Image (cartoon, rainbow, N blue to C red; front, top):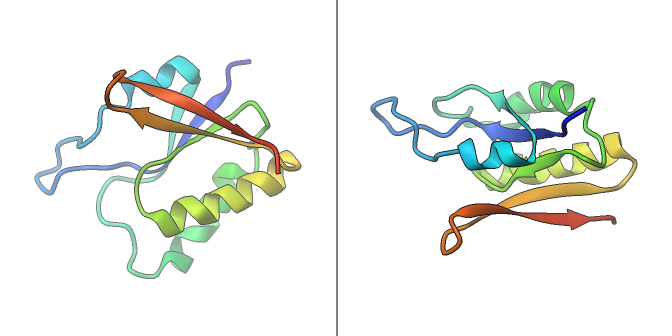
Length: 107
């Protein structure tokens, strides 16, 4: 089974166009958006139930893309770590190389 690449919040331009090309992330697994496009809720607490539900299936082979609201990414990392029993992998965009670089952790 292919890993899942979780994107916490689907990024968009104010006119509705996609801000970031996430196709290169699909090299690492199936891309799944947790929160829909648009502005995230002002209160991050309102997003936590959706994040918890989506990441309940997070495994040590999956990834979180380091993109978007930092408070939501941080909360997602904690939730993912609990689901995987510790390890959380991230994908960081490398602008010079033009691809996502995996960052593997095992707290």
